[in-house]
Length: 199
Image 1 (spheres, rainbow, N blue to C red):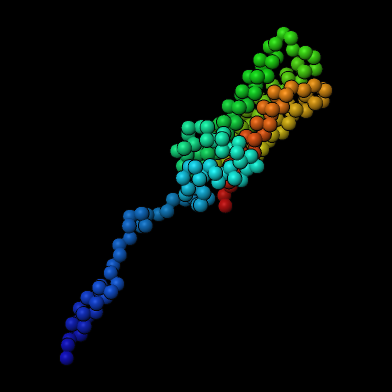
Image 2: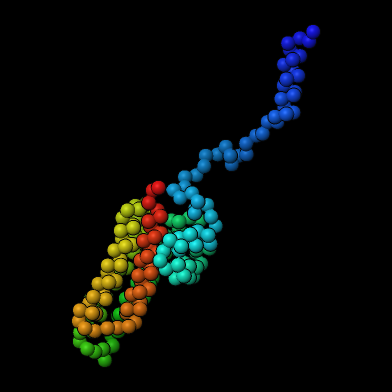
């Protein structure tokens, strides 16, 4: 009769052949990084941009605007895309303010009501710029509620400029067109900062 020790040795040999020991890879043993939105963040940048833009009401504009920035191709997560989108919004708000400044410098600007409206629009777009800038700073500080609010409230300031024009019975098609573009950036900013809220 075989000894108990022999049975133990035989069992170990059979077990190792039928059920080989599989060592976990270093990546499996390491702690998984924290990701607030696992599915989109795991995607490549093109997929991430498409994911974000699909949630806006201005998909084509969103894809074109974010795609025009060289930083987007290597953006690793939603927070990075948010910074790019808000930075683009600030740049465009500055462009609108520069246009208004050029209009106000024209000696042949008439009627007086248009000049008055554009002066007020300059103030409104200053607020638009600072609203987007505040949102950008807050993205870096991980303050989701405030950054989302600031991105949204920029839209109120854009509408403020339109009100200045209409309430005086004047119009500037270029300002209105630029205002529509700025509202697209508001929608992008609202969407991308909303995605940064803790799930």
